[in-house]
Length: 386
Ligand SMILES: Cc1cc2nc3c(=O)[nH]c(=O)nc-3n(C[C@H](O)[C@H](O)[C@H](O)COP(=O)(O)OP(=O)(O)OC[C@H]3O[C@@H](n4cnc5c(N)ncnc54)[C@H](O)[C@@H]3O)c2cc1C
Picture 1: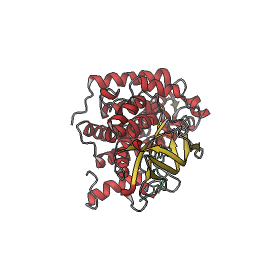
Picture 2 (picture 1 turned 60 degrees about the vertical axis):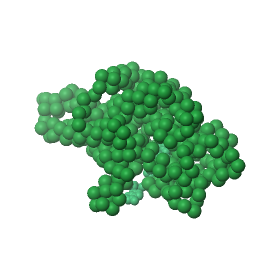
Picture 3 (picture 1 turned 90 degrees about the horizontal axis):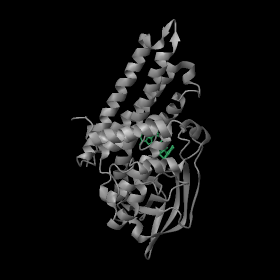
Picture 4 (picture 1 turned 180 degrees about the vertical axis):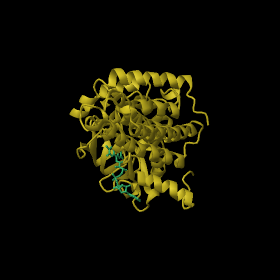
């Protein structure tokens, strides 16, 4: 497979790099420290076309594809995990989901506003007692005439407190497990929706994460996404895309950490020479670089498969997500070791990037869940790509 990037992708990568230099790096440390979410910066990302890569031009996207989405996500994640969230909230878990399963009217109404970040999106899957086991959710939607009445709660929802529109998963038939779940496009200003913050986080502080409560919320029947009872299938399809973004995030944060470690290893002198001259520091760096490159290749392969229409590549998506997100923590550990005491300080970005890196092992399917998908496929118990 050829991993050369097209001129169009190199051009948007360059825009993303400049954006990080000019708009993200000057403020990211302060925003993370103060838990400040800057809606304007997400809007700028929308205006620059960062969220529209895997969406066709007719809905306001660029049609540049999944690899372009991956490359841009990687650039932003080098500097900020909080801003990486937007690539799933605006694109993969919402706009792209509506593109795959929505009606023409829903596509026209929501996709352009999500990818331009005029609307902020959120994805409501997780609940207090339903994490890895999505089917354990309790939120339900009961049909009454031309409306559904939504009741229940969600937890750990990125953008919960600021979202304008959400893709919310709920049971329309509680008697059936996977086949009783449906997905809804919900106007987050609807009567009966309230929010509160989730538990305080150690990282990703410049992005709000909260609880959502649905107290008999009326959702027009026309806001059902696709067909009733297909919600679990749509959720898995959405995760297949959001996991690619997470993998790109893992690659990005690893690269950000490597860049910091290299800079420091060339500057810091001990025993009369830069620490980069010591073989054991080189060994650490060598491992960090190779693991990150391997993660990048798995991630690009996954994106390129999707670009040629293989969007249900669950196995390769799990490989990319598991490996990239696990590598990020190992690379963070190595970078911290190379920086020594300064790595442990808040003077350098390494500690913040380390906190960004840890989240990738949890989100979008934990490391265990992906290893399970990969191994059960290999054992022939359950085919991943269907
Ligand atoms: C900052 C942040 C933002 C988030 N944003 C969103 C969002 O926008 N929308 C949303 O819906 N959710 C969101 N989440 C929730 C996230 O998707 C869940 O945390 C994730 O699915 C894991 O669920 P859990 O934390 O409940 O872990 P659990 O499912 O309780 O798992 C705990 C541990 O048990 C292991 N485990 C569980 N089941 C198995 C098994 N069968 N085999 C082996 N090991 C297993 C896991 O690997 C993990 O190590 C967010 C979470 C965080 C922290």
